[in-house]
Structure formats: structure tokens, C-alpha cells
Length: 265
Length: 334
Image (cartoon, one colour):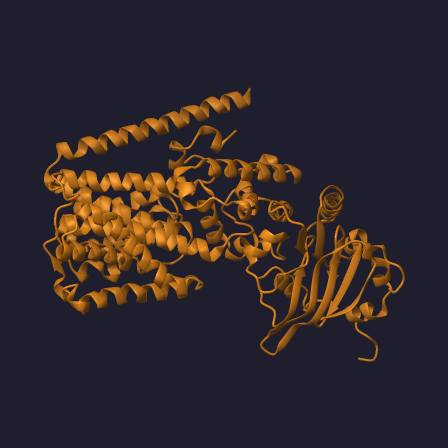
């Protein structure tokens, strides 16, 4: 891990410093330090209950950390409200899909553009020129995103009627519609069949190639982690226990121990 | 080819909706000239309940916040009108926006600290809020509200000039013009980013926040707008009855508004009109069975919940609904 690392040439997008989150007597995240560099796919892995999702929720403003800082593009965003964090450029998805079930696919994706809208109540009531322009813009972005995930034909279908795999993609599209510079995905491949997982991996690597975006993901499927990650961070019991390139992690004895347990326990 | 047939079919459908709309409108205009004063008043109270239903629909239907204290806002509007009119002689129609503003300000101050509560918790707090308003009115603070007797001698609506609304027909047109304007504004909001933001919050609050919607701001906005509309209803109600008293703003009144929205369909404007019609016209039609009124009402509510939980006219998404009468065709399909 000490040898030359081309990763360091890229600027840091997201950094957590000494991050801690406590629930009652349980320290879910304990002095967690991590860096995500620009343009990479960084995976956060670890056994169940390691605190991965808590890290995500702290980064995206759903939880307030007890200690430590979250730095995004050089700005301290610790404790900011979720909607504010979205507008600075971090968009996320959830482990259990959270769409707006009785709204159409297009409306779901339009939610992402909401943080870019500046017109208020009176503009909406009197249909000002700015409001009309922003509505068109919102629709255009949502339409291009729904084409990107190949669900154009279903754009007026209610989200709850969509297949599970399509719902996952819709959630990702909704996050992408916020024009994020960091996309945070919580177990994007869970519940997908092998073919859908393959498509997802292709989609994410394509995204990195085509757009100015960085991806941080939690993942349990080792094929995904090893297949697309540029960097892997391993957590156990709220702490970072290892990080490195996928191959390094694959052979790391501490990681194997965290997942499988050691002999002398 | 199929696209083309579909398009023509769609146009016919829209056409029929539009003609239905104009027939209803004509009937509304002719109605008061052909029936007796009594039935004009029935239609007036239908209008009041429609306005109250629309106001609660913003909070309950669009954002999904359980507000069982809406009569509190209604009372604030009515008492603002009553007190300012009887004590200071301010004309009623000038008080219309003022009553709305007073109710809105009250909603802002009261709801700011409780807006983060969810579901039943918010429901209980709003019940308390409504009851506190009513009890405060009974206790006659600063000798303003007249205690249990209320305030008497409220003027007919006017701007202070020669134009005075003093007959049933004129009241009928006043309330329905206000309802029509409110519906127009609410449809605008439904089709804008604000209406969508409200619906996102109703569907999933956490996901809405994580998609960039300022949940707190939009919830407060819903409460403030809902209260303002209830305040407007209070103003017209006070001048129609010429007196206000705390009995008109009980918990039962809040329940009725709740029922209007539930019967009609959450977030659906035509649904609210149907619900309001049911609540206000039902007791008139079934006057001979007055003693069984609650029995029938309860049975209907149970049957509704069992067989049509979405309401009588639920809002259709991305399809055809009342809203599309005003919307351009390319908005609903392209």
C-alpha cells in the first residue's frame, strides 16, 4: 500500500475525518477516516453491521455525526440538511428501494432536478417565464435520464408497477438527475439477477467514462466489487480495517478474518 | 397508424371532458335563478365545505400530513373578520385577504415547532391545537371574542362603497367565484414543481429529502396555504351567518373536513368537490331520516374504506383527470 499510487494524482472529492456516530451505547462508526478521489469507483465493503450504511447516512446528511467531519470538494458539510447536501453535488440511492410509488417514472426522475429550481410560489401560481423555462429544463433532464436507463417507453407508468430491476435503475436515474459530482450507491446490485448485475456494472463503468462523476458504493457482491472498483475500503465494527486496490484486498488476511472469522476465536 | 388512431381517440376524450366542464359551468350559473332561496343556501354551504375541503386537501391530500385541527385555522379567519369588522368597522371584502393572512401567520407560528412530527403524532398535536383555539375563544381573551356567545352583528360583504353583497344569490356567486379561483390556483400548483415536491414528501419523506427537496419548507408552505384558504372560508362564513361563536369550530368540524378529503380522494380536486357535496348535500336529501343520519354516514364511510380506499375520484397520474381540462395536450402525452 505504500508504493506509488496513481490514485493520489487525482484530487480528493470526499473525505471523512475522524467520523464517529453513536446510537445509544453502540458506536456504529468509530473514528472513520477515508478519502474518495475524483473519477474513481470506490467500494465500501464489510460484514453486516459494520457501519457502512451509517457512514453513507452521515455523509448524505440523514444522520448528524457525534464527532468528526465530512469534507466535500474542500467544504465542510458536516451536519448539513440532506437537501442542501444534494444541491452541493452528492446524490444517493437507498439499500431498500425508496421511490415515490404512486407517481410516474418520469415524475420520479424529475424529483432530482428539484434542487436546481429557483422559482417560488408566485412564479408557480402565475406561470412566470422563469418557471416555464425551469419546468421545460426539468422535463428535458428527466427525459434524457430515462432514455439513458432505457425505460423511455415506461415513462408514464407508475413506479410501483415497474419490475424490481427497473426500480433500481430508476432510483439511480433519479440520483443522476440532480447533476451530482459524487454518486453514492447503497448496495445497487442487491436483489438483481446475474444478467441485471452485469448490465449495472456496464452502466456504472460507462458513466465514469462519459461523465464527470465519482462513484462511492456499498456492495456485497464480490464480483461487482472486484470487477469495477478502482479502490476498496473495508470496514468492520465501525472501523476501517483495510483499503487498497481490489487485488490487494482480495488477499488481505484481516479482511478474510473479518468476513470468515479467525481460528483462535 | 395505431399512434394516429390513439391520438384522435385522445382528442375526442379531451373534447368530451371540455364539453362536460362547460355544461357544469352553465348549470352552476343558471342554478340559483331557478331554485328557491333555501336551495341557494344549501349550494352556498356546499361552496364553504368545498373551500374547506380544498384547504385541508393541500395539507392532508397533497403532503399527507394528518391535520385534525383545521377548524382552528377556520376559526382564526372567522374571528379576525368578526372582531375587526364589529370593533373597527373594516369592510368584509377588505378583510378577506387579511383573514387569510391572519390564519396563515397563525399556522406558521404554531406549525413551525411541530412540523417535524410524523403521522399520528402530528395528528394528536393538531387536534390539541384546534381545541386550544376553540377553548381560548370561549374564555373571551381581552374581551374580544365574546366568550361562548361569540361576536354578533357582522356586516354584509362590501368594499365599504355602494357595492354590497346582501342576497343569497350574491353570496352564492361570491363563494363559488372564490372556490373557482382557488381551484385554478391549486391546479397551477399541482402541475408545478411545488405540487410535485408535496407529493414526493407524501410518498417518501426520506427519499424526498435525499433527492433535494427541502421537506420542512414545503410542509410549512402547505400548512400556511391551507390555513390561508380556511381563513378565507371563515371570512365568508362569518359574514353569511352575521355572527360567529365557538360552537361552529369544534373538533367535529375538523372531522368533517377530514372526511371530505378521504371520501373524495387524497390530492384530487374533483374528488374534494364530490366529498364536499356528499357532506353538505347528504343531510339535506336525507332530512326525513335525520335521526339515522350518523348511522348512514358511518356505514358509507366503512364501505368506502373497504371498496374504494382511494376515494370517489382519485387523482390519476400522467393520465387524464380534471387537471387536464386546463392543461395543454402536450403536457399529458406527446
